[in-house]
Length: 565
Image (cartoon, rainbow, N blue to C red; front, side):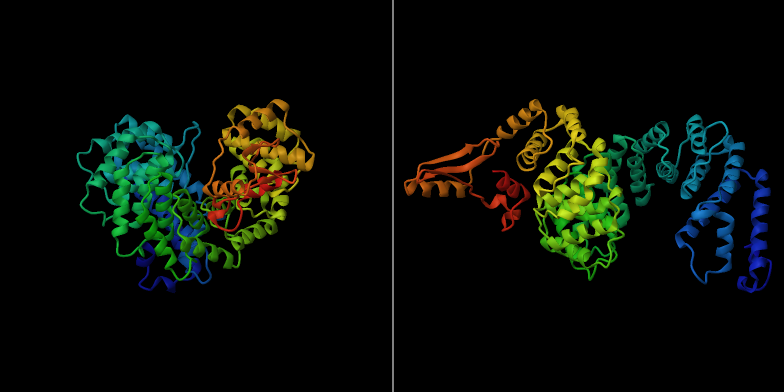
């Protein structure tokens, strides 16, 4: 405003140097006058500058941008688009001089401003700005208005400062409200988001909000982001509320169109329903139809694609057109550089868990990972899940498995029990030898984790041991550990399919003496054994469940059994 009032001409009429000098003077006058500011003037100044910083970051740098933006960026930002910490530290210090004068509104605005720029000023006493705001709010027993609660909760969650006492007090205030009509939908959903993000447990708050939403006449005031943030919060906080999820799902299903839902909102919503184990087939069908009906999926970010596919697999909702649409989008992409390891792992896990075989997708992902030479970016869980998924689908890309050996070996100490067993089983199923991975250190780690393994893990390790000793003549598990794995492996009760009954009936019909489910030395059971002309012949009856979605392609477990038997 001062720039405009200083001349009757348009801002563009000023030279760059004139603009810089005028804006610099405004900033200098503001800083020099800070000592005379009351709480309102000071917080409004800080909040205004924080909002400018946020806008400048969002806009980034571009050719031909106007002079004022360039100058503001030089004044308010430093390298890598980070805020000018000297300036905002100065404002924080000025705030501390009069912090006792701050009321609830200005405390929340102060926290909100610094969260906008993701900066937590620290002071010589070792306490930071957010600590001081908390202590002052608790001391005066601040009674925040709904917007203030949202601002405070969002700010503390955003900067990673979950002060339990403050969150508990604000949550209690919300619960004490007779009616939550004072909260805008965005404030409600983002407050819940903040509690979940901060990891602060307040069941009464979640129950209060859920009751309000369920009993609302309509959810039309809730934007798509409000809805997705809300169900995300309940799923992340592990607060079950079937009626809330049902109300939200029915609202979405009843919508004429999901065009107002951004890809992120769709992804978060189905992720939340799957995570909370809330099965609503009409919701998943509606979302799938919306995605399939789009001309292309260029608006979908890799994380959104991976979260959607993970959710459909987790919810056991197989929509063939959706899986094909997503796979085709990935296969036809010029580059997969935007996908991170977790996205790759989630995607191939989803197709494996859903039993959807798509060789081109798996090959595209494998080729990219091998060619990118960024295998060290995989964390233990992402690596184990990815290789397990390939092996489970019987897609054993030798180059992929071989390339991962050094990285997998480095992570031995970091795997969970399931991860360690999955890695062992995956390499056994893929039949890719890896001496530098499966060595004494690996065996010691198995023994160390022994008591924590579940039944399925012991069975996987037994199959790995068979592979190592019978096929590769490599390292073996200690005898007592071997025996435990073997005993658990053979303890599984055999299941006999109708097809197997029919085959055995025919064998008996032609006069062959038949034994069923015969235990052999490896620990496997042969479906049937007959003697023909003095020779003992084993017969395996691979029914539909030995194949991917009861199709023509054998599962990795079927391939491994055929090899080891």
